[in-house]
Length: 413
Image (cartoon, rainbow, N blue to C red; front, side):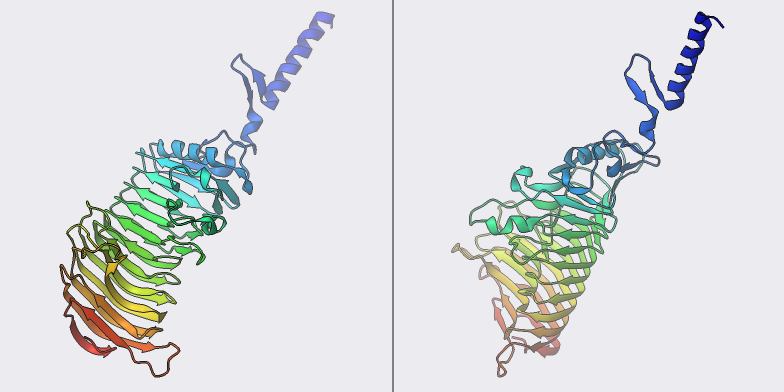
């Protein structure tokens, strides 16, 4: 074999070696086949079946320190543009992110499966829009997976001063019809834990929400301007309302919810803004309140616009050391002279049992401008558990004549 033949053989050997190892250059940059075997995929690249796995993104580290905001926002963009239903997978690990903008509309429904812990950055500056996970104008978005959404609010609660703007809410669904959240834990939100607005058909099931008592304005679930809502099998312990039902909420079912600590389940507050609309058809059933400031509550503000809250029921309720088990408060934050113009009509309190630490077990303080109508108290059986052994439970009624039936402790008024 001459020298020329040797060069040809060596060239062929080298070429086949490059091909075998997956590295050749064709003038469009370097392609390495080994990147498909264990190395991270480019940010947002989907694996088989339309699953966008955060751990496969470039630079992915679930160590609770590495900032994964860019990768997760890109994963959303790619999943949202998928023509078939897609899933974003957040696997086991601690994934640190700042503000997430999950903006629609999307080509197909998207599921966000949280198996690990998604952590919000502790500083407020990372959330300029006032939201951590902002899901906007996307239909059929569902969060599930058994993992945790940790807001790290404990680092900021004590820094809040009177007059400060609201702290960032953890999860916000806005204009997201037929969406929901199931089987996840929401922990220590800086602001509201979960909010759904203009998202008809919203469903919450088997969710746990917990915040320390130092967190003010950390409502568990807040809904408003929404229809056909279902909240079931959920446990909430926060520094404010467990559930607050805002204006223009219609067709709300709350069943098998455990609330406490917190401020109870509230309709309202209503009447804060001039463009608010009616609330109707709200049913709270088979729920438990433990060590809460309030139980079943309706609250409205003075000098409100004229609107109606109607067909509201609390049935099958258990109280455990609750301060105000049944309360209608139309003097909520009564810092204006004019009476509330929210008309409350058709309210049922039925089958209540348990204990209260206050002698004022039933407080119905309705508006002087529009007295409550159609309020009924049936089978209310509460026991005093406070420090005064001689205390007797009482009912207080102002600008309302409730219908009373069945066993009543305290006596009706």
